Length: 209
Image (cartoon, rainbow, N blue to C red):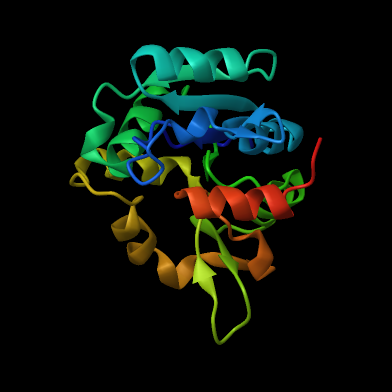
């Protein structure tokens, strides 16, 4: 996938099983909108050259397709989301078009991530020769690394060899940590809706549309 292109895809990982929520969190209403639409809208508003959503099979996947209608996403189905997030990375990489410079991976359950966060990551990716551009949240003493992350396209083939796990390509990040660029964002943006309590927190902090 090595290329001289500057095109970057925005990838929404939305195939999770929501085991801690007790219901499909991607479609859980937040201010009257499915939760996944917040992260999807942020990716779409950042002007990525291609948009891809990884979704589960069945009715939940169909619901996500309907929720994202009109935002410009293509879709790839993870046939077995129980294998963990790493499996969704592999599905995404297999579905991305050729000729990309990189891909920006975001999670469907992080509704506070804005288009501005994505734009900052994309600018750092375009302005540097970094193989990976990472986001972290909080101050220097308590920073937490979490998506979205941008990966150079020629690195993505490596995720096809990663084992099943409920996290992203940590080994890929670790292998290129010395050359990575890391941007720091406010800790308040680090909210992933994994539990009913987190959904209540999102209702208090996510601006209503």
